[in-house]
Length: 221
Image 1: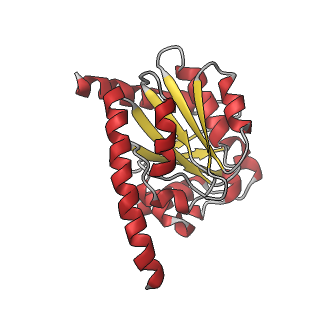
Image 2: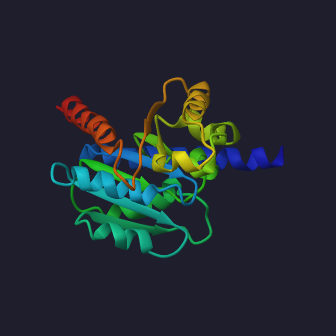
């Protein structure tokens, strides 16, 4: 009970700050996606492929969350898009207050803001940061049981990307079983199976994302 008593006001305070972040993103009319996965699932590679597909048509900002270092942000900056680094130091997730610290660095409007959260399937799911929605990445080497072990993320995610499908012949991962388990937790989840390494499935995802971006523009006008 003591843990719940402490956690509840923390989440309420975070939710309030997330609303303030959302107001700022709304002024830019940005589509903001909070990308969550375990370490090594391929978040950065996935973001890289998406940026390569869309950077000529849309203004893109990547907010990179890591405990330490700038390895991923340096890699993404080479693509010619703007990148903001947030180092959490000891925290295993981004929260709304950490995200707010990056907002003064935003000097122009962006169509798409991709936020790469810290690699973790638990804590990042609990904290809103001002996003339009959460995107969960599940990689095939992790196993098809992750939606059962980490249900909150898969329950909350609007989109689930099953990555590293090029490894399906070599790992014990049942693609349909994983999809069924995701749908069991979240019947409305939109699922894409892709390989960020080979690019397979990325066109379908980017087509979906372009529709999301265009719909947001229409709703604004």
